[in-house]
Length: 144
Image (tube, rainbow, N blue to C red; front, top):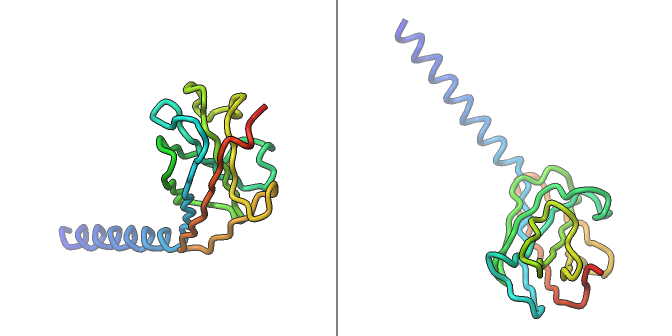
């Protein structure tokens, strides 16, 4: 009985390791390097929020995921991207009270990953790979 239990336990551990290895190789990751050159102070209260979108129509609903930075320069990582192409945007919170659960407040500085502004650039990531993109933005584009 003990030998059968040990064999069954060993089988389940092996199965779990195989599943974990497979999901790791299927994972798509997007790293977004942010450089905010605007005049606002970025800190724990006045953050930069980086949004991951599965559509170029960034106003068509909530983003797939949101990460934040509390400095003008830094990198955020979206490690389980489900749909590609993906798109990313950034917004600076000048109010200190926005939590990124709604559209950015009036006066927020905006940026997006784009090679041909104002069109968002699609980001394609193959399974098991990581892609790094950069967003540099200032105060020239703001929420009215």
